Amino acid sequence: MQQSVSVEINGIRYDEQVPIRMLLVDFLRDTVGLTGTHVGCTFEGVCGACTVHLDGEAVKSCMMLAVQANGRAITTIEGLAPKGELHALQKAFTARHALQCGFCTAGILMNAAEFLKENPDPTDDEIRHALVGNLCRCTGYSHIVEAIRDAAVEMRK
Amino acid sequence: MYPATIDHYLAPKTLQQALEALSLQHDGDAMCIAGGMSLMQAMKSRLVRPKTLVDLQHLPGINSIQFSPDAIAIGAMTRYAAIARETRLHGAYEALNDAARHVGDRQVRNRGTLGGSLCWNYFAACCPATCLALGAEIELASLDEKKSQRTRRIAIGDFLKGPLETARRSDELMLSIRLPAPPRNAGSAYKKWGLVTDAFPVVGVAVYVEVNASGACTAARVAVCGLVSGPKRAGSAEKALVGKSAKDQGAIAAAFQAAARELDVQADMWASPDYRRMLIQELGSEVAHTAFQRATGRK
Image (cartoon, rainbow over all chains, first blue to last red; front, side, top):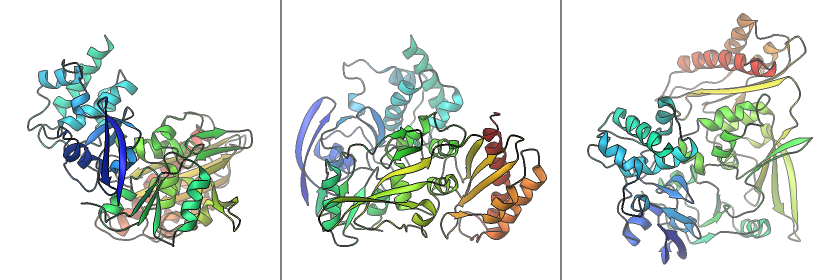
């Protein structure tokens, strides 16, 4: 029922005993105390608010068990800008007013950060396609698309 | 929502360890978890309550695509994202690119695997029907009485049963999805229609054609998903496509009208039977056109 898990999160190693059925998102929030990763839909894996990086790739942390992360490296929103200066995406989201309530924002930033590594010069259509897994109920997405486009330009410099 | 209590979690590092874990379990007690994009939902909704989870993520050798002169072997743990990026499937097996590029979303494609999709065989999944149209063969491993590894190969049409059912025994592990070396002048395509972008298909159609030097079809396979009875071949459309070429638009449309009549379509909260028949016709004609273009090398 319990299982040990050893996982690196934002560069820090955590060794914990957890119930096998514990979701990774609950491990991050409740065991480790990193509450920037949000829980939106919790069940269907459709909202994307809990998106984190697993060995650099965007994944939904409600769709994984914590034990599946054993031996792997995770980056959460708290680790996106480790040196205290905001990530280009965070700056662009601020400048473009790409959030209102902000609940979905952490997940979108984590997804977009990996997307821009894969596709540094995306079209608006490609940005919109990349956002399929992230629900935002406030903004209507226009400002989010603009912010990701701006961040892409900034990151190519 | 939370999964029911899970007693054991195993993360085997070798195929032998994984097969031993599966062989020791009573039927249904242990489940393999690949990417978990279907299984996690099923566990959280308590549709399934495995006592033991066998995590396949550390198994070596089954998470990439191998190209050899006589076959293409897609490891069962190959993720959608890798299939979406793979350019060497173009032409004959491009339907797999079409399907993988629009499964779920980026986060799902980063985790979900082709083998997991086939073993789960959800009725509205893209990849089972696509592999059915491509004539794939499934390679399964298990242990014999002396705990030696043995493998068997089974045609995809025999592997896929009704929804959530396959011919895989609970002590077997899927190793690979095998496709014959692509014939010259073969093309395939897949397209789905869902309620929102990249959603589960209300209907999806996969078409594979081989053509001769003048562009006429010499062999065809058509498969449809979104049907409550599971992924199905449409034999009437396959027969009707033979001898036709891309310019025979009326005949291609008629082939998919026949498919729409032949297949058993259901009413549910997403679509009426008539709407599903219309989707089979419209998507089928479009997908066949793309498959012909790919077979003849035209874009």
